[in-house]
Length: 260
Ligand SMILES: Nc1ncnc2c1ncn2[C@@H]1O[C@H](COP(=O)(O)OP(=O)(O)OP(=O)(O)O)[C@@H](O)[C@H]1O
Ligand SMILES: [Mg+2]
Image 1 (cartoon, helix red, strand yellow):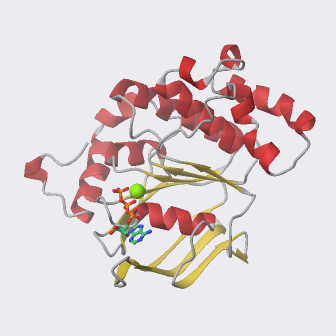
Image 2 (cartoon, protein in one colour):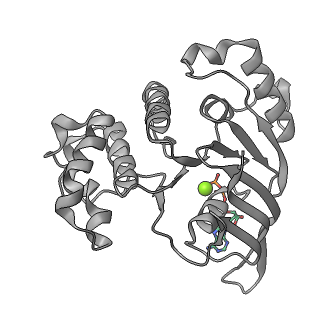
Image 3 (cartoon, helix red, strand yellow):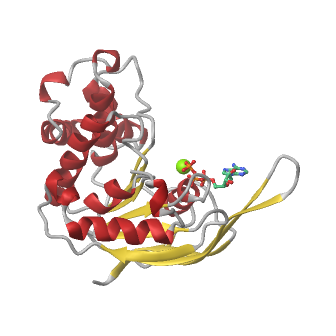
């Protein structure tokens, strides 16, 4: 598969308030193909959010290069949708108005995108809630709105930073299935951050494992499990083998039971 997003020797050093250098990422290189679903896993503080923000052009890197579609990322890009861990919705705007927010911010013609917004709301099962306000929605529904907001302007790339971290296990599984459905319909390139090894395997074509800080590439693991995927896939031996491999890459001891 030809590369679409390319990370070449990406390094990030933060300057702390104490004026010290903190090496967060070191020499990270990997590629993502167009339409591919790739997850990043690693322990807390290993640089996952940092990596995602660098790819989005939200923060500068200190060394190396990120290319999207062959051009270097130098600042925030319009062709990227970003879903944050918490659904940051504006409480005084309805679901539809929240979905259309990026269109307004970018100064695009609202009328042209209204139909598109309804289509995506339909895709995530929120048609009946278009005129409701965020406080009238459950946490999972709010998170779905933040996904519609990231999709409405048709970005080629979707970056998701632990988007389901705050949800209960059942809602999270439902959201995983929904995300796969949306992804298979829309053909976006997705880079997904999670601390859940099973979530990463279930969703992805490939899982990128980072070492503890400073985040370096431990390895990338190909997930050669058939699609469409169902939740009972997680009970299979092949799934278990992949989870074991990733746990060992992250240095998680089997006898501890590991993280989910
Ligand atoms: N603005 C900043 N200034 C200084 N250090 C920072 C800044 N942002 C992050 N860091 C440091 O960089 C390292 C990586 O942080 P990052 O948020 O990327 O980790 P993460 O893998 O996303 O962790 P988590 O799983 O807990 O979300 C951490 O040691 C953190 O303290
Ligand atoms: Mg993070």
